[in-house]
Image 1: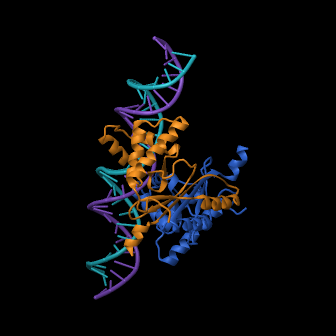
Image 2: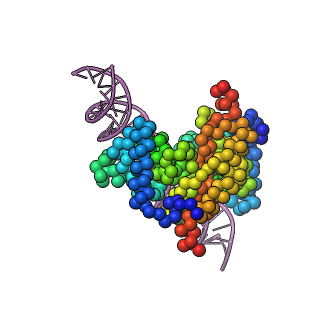
Length: 159
Length: 159
DNA sequence: CGCATAGTGTTACCTTGTAACATGGAGACC
DNA sequence: GGTCTCCATGTTACAAGGTAACACTATGCG
């Protein structure tokens, strides 16, 4: 079983690696990982769960980094536009990306019990979808694939 | 090319068939297709596009069928719960189902230009996803598959 | 009739998201 | 060094989406 947010892992490392990775990529791409943006990424990485924009905003406010919605939304826009975070449509919420870097649009697995979210590869589902769409003359540009169910831990405790 | 909301079709027939079908199914299943519910379904069928709850509510209000949000949301809950309409997460909006009856969770193709929405079969993408999830120990219960792109007509006029 | 159930009407509120404008700060160019 | 430009931030004010909770109505049923 591959390592995901569902499996036990060194979470501290997972945060610092995520941030480091973002720092590196921003440097390379000439993007500015400003304090607010960086902090939002850290908050998302710390939680390892989908968080609402206002939940993030509360944290920023406590830390004196901004108190109005646009602050949070702008940081989130930056992070999602550059692949450091993703938006979960179903939850109107955001998660840190767990493999920033690879140009990817993952599928999400959302645990309906503990709300943890994992990314998984969506190449196959996406290909199958593109195929079906082609038959209708529709050209797919982006696709959101979001599954709800039970994560390994919650499956275990349910049975 | 199969007939979808993207292809030209007899729209009047498409509305009346949709309603008839719903009437029949409700009778069979002992569900009540009340005036509000029926009218909401008609409104959705007329538009053949994703509509926000408040947009629908405006129509209801004009017709004296209810003026407060819960009225619209309750009708929409009924319609989606029974497969007569679907919710598009990405748009926070609703569409009439184009093949009510078959027990299905379709994939959606959303045109980013004209906002029309078509359903397509999601069996394959869904199967591929379930497979990927299994590798992570995650059990998928429901999955939303929503693609954004260009519909045949808009593709045409873009080129 | 009297009751239970399901649907409707309404108030009041919460959450999510954005337009628009003012401010500040860092690099580019002269 | 000045100043211009671009980008990010701060703030106000509001739009859009969604729901809890309660009172009322209709309908079927013993």
